[in-house]
Length: 346
Ligand SMILES: [Zn+2]
Image 1 (cartoon, rainbow, N blue to C red):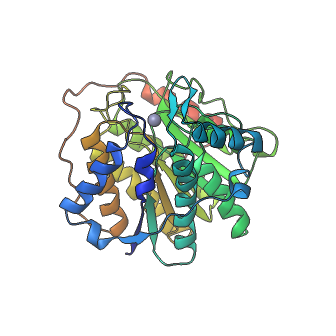
Image 2: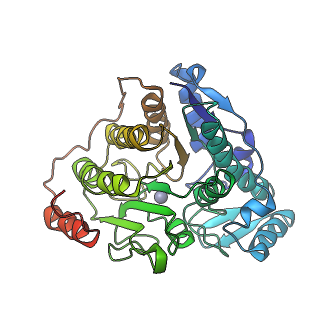
């Protein structure tokens, strides 16, 4: 298997100081890929800047101008969580372009699959506003790009970042061409993503939210994937799968309260890889969203590349969450979600 890596030093120039979403997340991940010897097995893909037209597939022209001029004036806060430095506009433009470069390479068969290690992350960014450390919605722009450039009709976006990808949901809420599946802690930032948010108009049914109670972990995530995402993906028949990969559902992440292990991130990625093989000639692109424990981000990134390369051994240097606690109420919860999406008896 040929797995592509998108990375560019410009991503480090989005200087957020000692903010949790900082350049060390990528510096440490890249060093770890080097130290473990896996980087030399990857095919490096060049990031490129997104064009204005491409950004405008998701964002309002006035908002893009505002971000650009703010960078030119030295940066500052875009919202209470999202800070910019002078180079942040360029980094954000390359982050969106990096995911599109990965889509392009997978579509042209330069690589079998790819993981874009970009920042700033994207899935909270909405049409006219930055939110939650995100400036432009990289995965939404890449999905629009896949639909338009390659004349696709159906794209699946799977999002296992611990936060609900409200921006991605918004971008495709009325769009039947994109099946958006998100598993996330709820209630939690940004407040959206309850199971009854299922899309609107022609897009009714193509938004699938799997809220998770604080404290749930490996077993619950894998059941959500196997019992809800897999049958819905088979029903939808995507021509391309994009993944918003955040590692903040890990038990050691300091921002959230879920109990997922690196092994489970790899297993979820394996499920997605198998779905891609079954439904869309293996065409699969991951992009980095959140994840704030540096060791977790580095080791999870490596684990996903192991999955993409087809390596059977997955290293999990942090192991499973320490105390085994029986989750409450999961069975009824998943049945409700299956009911909403008419998955009874599957
Ligand atoms: Zn997150």
